[in-house]
Image 1 (tube, rainbow, N blue to C red):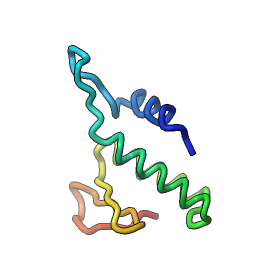
Image 2 (cartoon, rainbow, N blue to C red):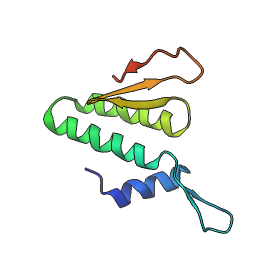
Image 3 (cartoon, rainbow, N blue to C red):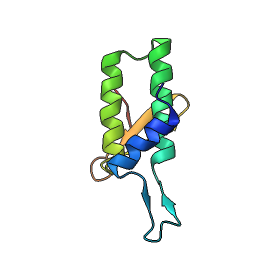
Length: 94
């Protein structure tokens, strides 16, 4: 698993975490959910539910989420995504 600090640094570099002008407020709207998705993906990789190829697809889905191109949600142990401006039908990840 990626250490939390390393993951958050990566999100900072991607612009998913930012500071207010006076640096008194941290904006990280998607950071904590993104970390939850990463933990979920690695746990499923370790348990054999996901392959390394699947993991790569989930990283792509996670990138699109961070860019604001789709929404993600969990229902039980299943990750779903919805394209905000496309069909509103939920699609199970990979």
